[in-house]
Image (cartoon, rainbow, N blue to C red; front, side, top):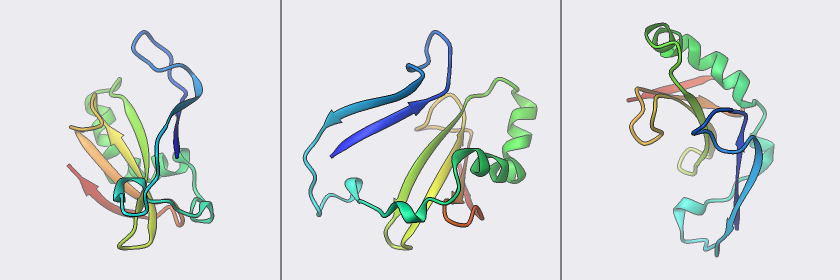
Amino acid sequence: MKTYMWSGLTGPDAPSAGITPGSEDSWSATNTSTEPFQLVYLKFDSDQALATAQKHGGTAQLKKTADLPVNFRLNWEPRKTMLVWHVVYGQSMNEPQLDVVVDATTNQFIRVEK
């Protein structure tokens, strides 16, 4: 298993722009944090997920703090057999000011996590 990160950011604290491969790791079917998924579920990209998230609290967050970072995380939810985008507003992915979850297959709003 190998993770990849894509960044389009620039700045002193930003990761390198483009695709950066992570380190290789062993894969285990019993490890829920390494759940594989079919790419057929990914029909909407992060820019479309952002547009949906903006309608569900994102616009208000950016109105309060215009330079607030917005990051994206693509997750597989095995219980619902669903691939989702987490559109994360805030300085930290672990403690966001707003986390809007959007279905990556339909681009429909799912929920807000705070």
